[in-house]
Length: 326
Image (cartoon, rainbow, N blue to C red; front, side, top):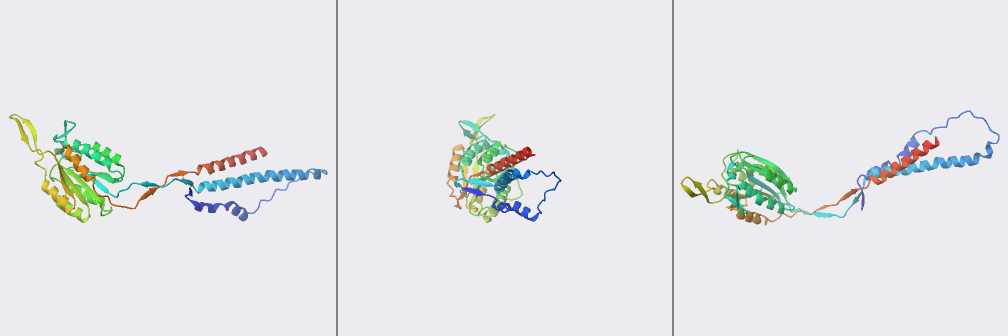
């Protein structure tokens, strides 16, 4: 269907008539001329030709004015309504970039990788599957930074996540500040649609706010937090005395992560390898979406160029005809 974006501009259509009515008519200039006795013999034909020559430019000008006003109303062609997929979930990912994330205790395709690389690899698939969700990204180390605000642009979120590097936000771990930043960024969203997924491999060693205090603020703001503790339980390390087992996750504060999740109505997950991390994100995919009103989009095609082009063409014809007559 055709839609006019600014239909009120049709009120200027009678403007030329209004100007003609308000302004006084211009009287022809009388000039001295010789009287020809036989002028009456051809005066009738000349009057008819002159009258027709004056009428058609006026008619073209009226049509050109009509087309110009029509173009100014901005006519548009509206296509069929297209339903947009909106689930109503606002997901914020908080990813730890502290120095301990460089520990290579994960395996991907039979190759050892550090914890951040494994997190990117699994979280990337998770982000691609969240069609219709708004996703944001927080990176934290010694400080917490909002890398991406809530957006439907999953490609941008994934790109910025892949560009993050260990130590970008400092070498320590500010879990409380990351939660506090998420609370601040999600406080204006629907109360039953706020979700934070926090991944870390250590304990809170920096920041201005304690993790449990931040969790209290999150619970008061109806922000549900899912915490993920990443890192293997044991790995073989070579030393001068031979190979021996160590626990690379000895600094992981699981008790605090469990309390954070439970106090906000979320859940704590433990990822010891890439398969477990993938499974955790599969479970997170089963979060119930919050129903919202369906949103529709109607594609618009601008049509103003057609009447505008015709109006300019008629004006050009009038100008050429006047030049020829002169």
